Length: 46
Image (cartoon, helix red, strand yellow):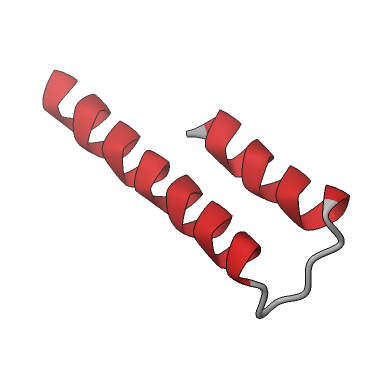
């Protein structure tokens, strides 16, 4: 999940995207999906 957040941040910085840019929206959605998946996996491990 941390790597996905970092990748989304790099998309924002390296591509010089604006808040409404589709690339940033997709990267952010992917990062959120990774966080949710990690939460489910870690939640089921406890």
